[in-house]
Length: 209
Image (tube, rainbow, N blue to C red; front, side, top):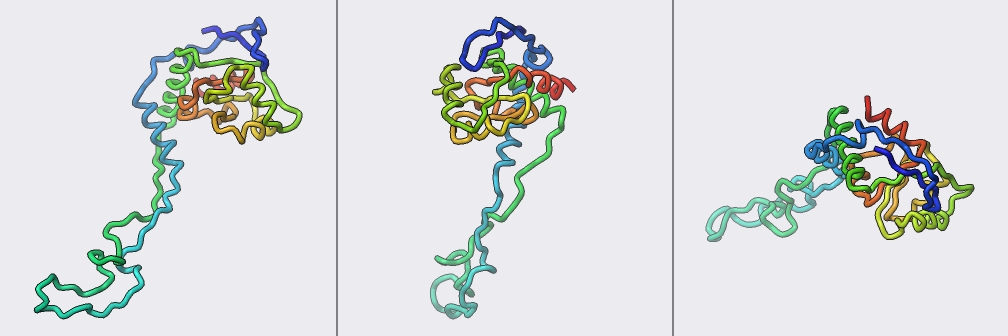
């Protein structure tokens, strides 16, 4: 699959790059995508939720009424979950939501995600670029030139660029990663994936193993 290379002003450079069919042209595996996205979202959860059970509630331990003769159920503690202000039954406890996935499955999921975006013509290849200083306005100009200012976008750079990353950090609809930071969720969550020319080799070598 050949794709035209654009510059950051959106103009065609007249060059084309060959995208590997092994990475950008496979038959997508929906279940692999599901598992990888599920793991990614699970890893975002802090797992710090907690509610107090009856042993942790502050309250008197005296018996609140006599055992018999009241006509109602017996009750031994004001901290019982059946009373207002009592402990919670089977409440949430801090836990780790992460789970393990096979590396080959994760690799398959990422290739599937890239193949879906390539098939739907949502991939754009641009020349490598950088900014002299972090400036959000410059990054917005790049988005406008590529007609992405109203869309969600993922930029994949050949190597980490602090200035480009900082320039995009305040924009909720755009995300910048390097070739090693490509993940299934980010690829599918973007309307358009913008790939820097130098990152293609890194992406293909990481996913062709």
